Image 1 (tube, rainbow, N blue to C red):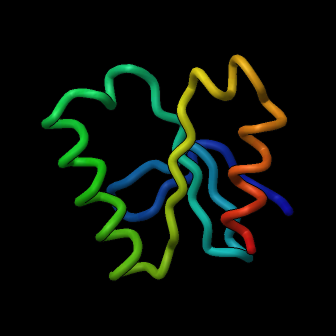
Image 2: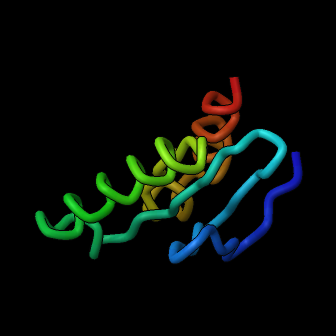
Length: 80
């Protein structure tokens, strides 16, 4: 599976995007814990899904740092 980094989709930038699977991967750090940011992230994911047909999977940055294989498994599971 090929992923592009910092992939633009309209006004959004996805951390990683696999076009053939229409899957966006967002790596979320602590800033995404704030209530306002969670609301924005949910709205953004909904727009990407409903308008562009892109599924978004969110992976915690801590998981990537602590256990990259577990993070890869989260992404693999999202691919089906």
